[in-house]
Length: 99
Image (cartoon, rainbow, N blue to C red; front, side, top):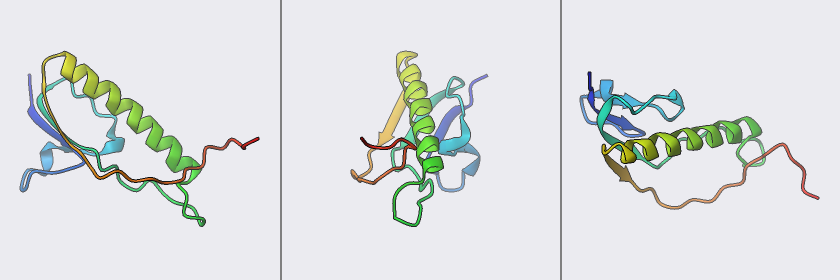
């Protein structure tokens, strides 16, 4: 059974039950209309102002998940609205050292 609409990263006033968080791992398979806000939340910064190693890993996992889910939704003919956020730059720890 289809749930019709879901929002990720944004909410419809008075309809919080339609919302999924970025880190929810939610599948979009059962939804006809998807409203996706590209303003990813803060994932945790360290003392130097860089995205922490754990935050960086979580962000990369979430981006990969939503890239796959949104791609599948579009391929399945779902209606996908994407709210584009202003471009931001940040430093992220990867756990790898530069040579």
